Length: 320
Image (cartoon, rainbow, N blue to C red; front, side, top):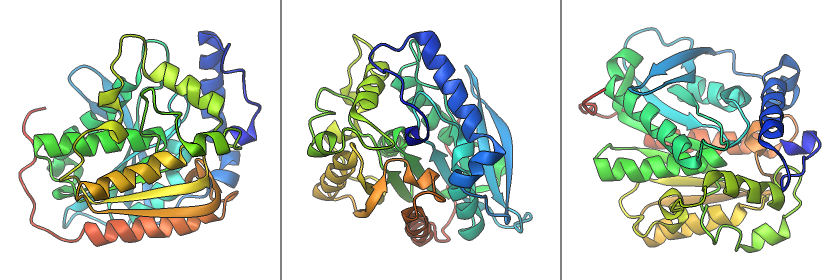
């Protein structure tokens, strides 16, 4: 949403300035006035904050539950991870998540992960997404969800987080029904900027190449191997949950999504790529400014509805 504010100089920004930028951005998108561009939630969904107590930390999650669902059958689980990286809050995604909760119906849990900062690399955000998913699945009865009907949805940095979760789920035997990646940034290695879309849309309204380079610098501190944090560079993408990759065309990371969809299909993983002409990065969080967001929301809901059909519940993962 950088188009709505003046961009700082990402090459010289200090730690204190970064913290101030993140705080101001989060207060802005959490305000009532922000609904004029982030969209109004579906009134058929209840929205609450809850805490997830993990063995070594406590994370907040934004929970969207269909209002008319009282007891009865367990709901499908949609784990959502917002975009933003070093700024952002789950509140900015209330529009899409409340509509998904009401219309699927499903329990949508949006992770308020840690913010990228010096001392908080991308690996921490990836762990936050996975650990919340694992916790909710392990305690499926308490959350009222069916552990046999799970999907993950991520936007921008969140797309990387949930793509990583889908890969880890395959490795650890957690069955996912679907993954949805919206304008995902999927490569934090040395090749992350080596795409035509990075050059063509380097000065796009909502994500610039300069901001992307700063994101990469925070994500992968010196001495960190970027390959395990880069789904686009993973060798084996077979056997993953079916994917919907949503790409706005005016976006520096558009080619990340396009190439990932290609690689999934080459590996035998079902993948659908949809492109929204004239839409910018983070457009799904700006439905009142970018009209293509409504079409994207409809296709995401349809994709999830197709894959989250009634099935027999499995035993959740053991442990915490």
